[in-house]
Image (cartoon, rainbow, N blue to C red; front, side, top):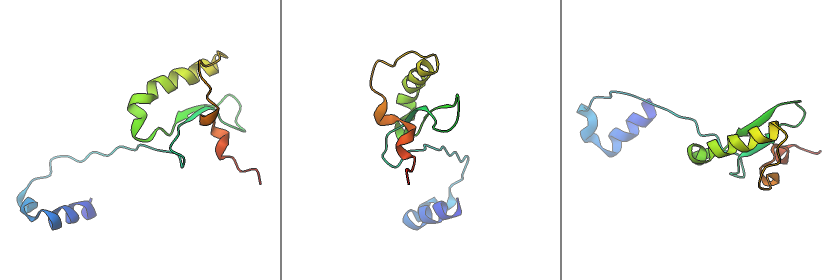
Length: 93
């Protein structure tokens, strides 16, 4: 916070007399390829994930969750989820 406020005052010194009422943060985890992780986690039985949406989590999260819930119930998703498979980051060597 100190760094952020210091920079804000550097570029807008008129804010020096302002009052800070609230600070909020939020994490929006993203994958290196910017595609979410959807499906079973390799090496962990009965463990599934729907994460890594980055800034699109609020929009895509509910649908992704529904797709993964279907996978858990052994219902084939209506689209190919292989581009989002968690194992794409598993090292083979």
